[in-house]
Length: 310
Length: 201
Image 1 (tube, rainbow over the protein chains, first blue to last red):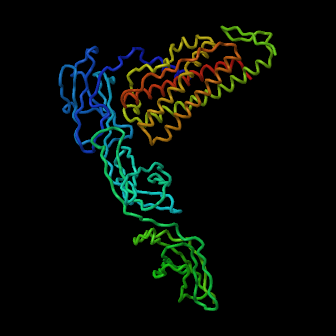
Image 2: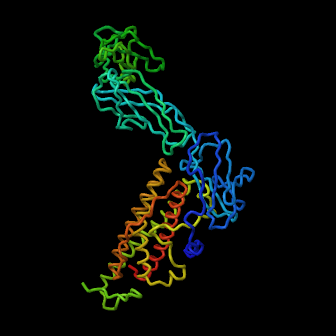
Image 3: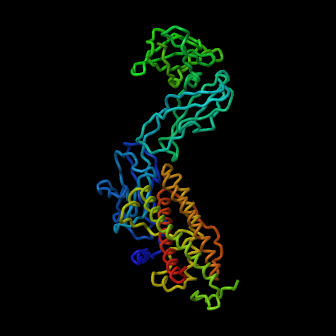
């Protein structure tokens, strides 16, 4: 404990100047690979000359060849081909006096501008409201925080609305609590935090009514009458077309039945008696609000097992 | 219940004091001491976590920050010898001043780190915990000083100063707050250890 308390004796007792030096630019945002020239101007009260100064970036001393004395109290440094920021709080570009003490600092935010979000998909469980999800365009390589804005409008009215409830279904999602009638969701990505060359808007528009549904529930598979080699499946859903896939228990190869149409029951024929089969169903809504466009296939339902009687 | 008569200079209860009052004081001291043990450990961890997220030179072992006065919180104001020469009551008084200011200062650091390091959830958790622990210690100190008959300091006017004008100064201010938090935690632990030996349970 005694050694611990001795630390206090080492605290500097001198009252510091409020701002011994000023660095320009302060807290810039920059693109990876670009160059930067920064200047450090010392307070004339300090009686320090530009030649007494040096620079470090993230603790590493920068080479004197990159310095330039601009006047008696100002030293510049040029950084070329900047790497992406090492930490989210910014790279520390620091101006020191000859004895190593820190005079001023500026935090550099070096990254990549955001890319357009992709794979915008929306779904609704009740045809009254909508949840949309998207994937970010860029992967990694930038600490710069990206704001996403989802906008939507009624197809025929053209007035923009902005989605307010973000992150309802994961980080890249938004919930639109309105009647569905012919909404066209589209998204913006914007990189904010510090205004600068990276702040620009990009937009990507999704197509109308790319809707899907939850997978069918209550898929039941039952044996049919006396026929030895048939299974029936029943599903409940409205206005959708269906696909069935089935496989034998000990095989990983699914057989797909494509032409199920909009029937909610289907007979699977040509099956081996006494063999356990797994059956799954998925659906694709169509004809919503008169649209002729197909939706997206839902996920497969949970597999249901059954076997035709021997 | 008999009133505890206290010699202010030495805080030794008079012979007429009831032992139950002494027990109460000893219990409060023990509780407060436990809190200072926690604070001492957590404040070390907080400083390490903080500098990790600010990058070099903050995170380097021989970091020499420019001195900065943190508004509302004096650096532990006296030398080691002078601190040890203070009375228990005076030490508690200085601690009460510090812990009245620390929660607000840690809160301000948390706000700045929301901007600088929004994804550093562990740092945010620790800053939040630190502010809560400081508030807890402030309450404990108030109770303890009341039991010992030591008058507390006046409530400080909230004085956080103006927000730092740029990111580097924000990092620096946060560093000083976290380091002072650690230093005051060590001091409070020292003061309470002395009191536990004087008022054993």
